[in-house]
Amino acid sequence: ESDNSSSSSSSAVISMLGFIPTFLHLFPSEIRTTHGVPRGLAAVSERRPVMKILVGIEGSKEELNLTGADWYRLPNATLPRDELDPLTGQVKFGIIGVSSNDGNANEDRDAEDVAAAAVGEASGLSSTLDESTGSVGNTGNRGKRSKSSTASSTTTATTNSTSGKTHRTKFTSGVSWMKVSFPSAKDPSWFDRHGSITTCVVTIEADDDFVRMFDTQPKIYSIIKSGAGDMERLRERVLKDLVDNFPQLDGKILCTQVQGPLRSGLTHDPARFAIKG
Image (tube, rainbow, N blue to C red; front, side):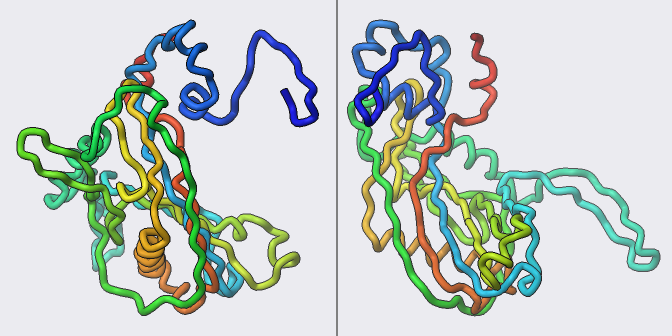
């Protein structure tokens, strides 16, 4: 039924909101009870929700030496160990692998995928879900670039039931998964319409301060209501990381805003693609 009270009936409805919001939040519980759980549902997991930090920057893409290409940091990605001959300048292709410091990377990522909430258990699919979004705005400039190296592991959150130790997922500058894009640099008409201003979107995975994973079937996340202080601390860490990787932005940041957590669909793991039907 639409806003103008007109309604229509159909044998099928197509939802563009994603599987988790559609099945768990839009479907009435009686429909799920009547028709049962879709085959293979118990094998899937929801991907960790993301946070988006929106950044306004002084200067055009030419002035800042930026392109429309997206920049990713993949903590567990393997890197080619190529060597450059200092005499000839020729590149000698090496093997592809992770460094000796990356021994715990895969274990960390596996732990994150199966993380359970440390503060409670969930018995239903949707009864305890509570979604909210947060935002915080600020203006100002960033400090000088710090000398931090990119690590190949990520801080994860899981509860070890045998040892009682709790590891929390926290965004760590220079370490955690991050995507940086400059939407205005992709638009050829941007400068004519908006002048010497550049937009930036930084996407990261949400901390445990903002989301909680429930070990249900399917595994899902609930959104935790957080305070402005948590958002502000996250914003500071992300902007530091942004300037570390794009030092030409130092002193050019005009305004920022944090949006999220935002749901990002199902995890693209082997279990999902092994489901029949």
